[in-house]
Length: 317
Image (cartoon, rainbow, N blue to C red):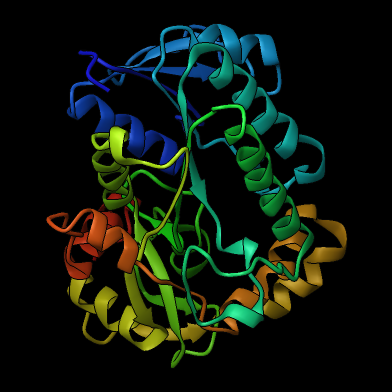
């Protein structure tokens, strides 16, 4: 990829990983276009293009001139996966094939089952225990099939996202309450188990670094992002230090309330299905990524957490 400036189309630029990746690409000198269903959207250094990721012609039109398509779009609130996830990736594949772009997909731990826990490598068998996981496996199968036609893709699989630009994640929606002073945290699993966390600015900078080595990537390239591996107790201690509140309490997450609401609320039904990911250690083996990017460094957890908590507006004393 020797063209300067390079252009990336970001689908899902208003979300956490899409927005952070767009900002990192702009900082690295890329031109960034983004598809939006909202008319008249401007700003952020992005060229906003009106359209819908569910409409193949919109994606193709927006992809004109792009060397990369970041596919970071997901149904909001865990809803409508059966209806929209595969059509959206197929639209992206068709556009990438037409313009010769590489697809970038933030991957999911949903693809895997207990047979490969706790430390998961890129070549681990994918036997998901949920329908959402089966759909994510199908997404990557579509990318693998497209690779036979020369469509290039890059999957960077991460644990739970958190960061200053992401509100649709467990830290922001379950463990703390944005906009309210931090009095306690609510942890969804056994506090002695390790959990994989992915700080969004680190994920974005890693994607940019991988794209800078485009000529060395496989047609269908996969990497696992190790991120911050923390037990619940270690996460609690990190939040205590980052918030300057050494006596901050940790309480169990109110799964009983999710169970109570789930029969009447689709999002809560889907959240309940994912509880198994908190009752097991599901970790990303990042050795291959570290070997490929030996000089790349992640933000220390205390620094990342302080930036995140400040952005969430919970540090008011």
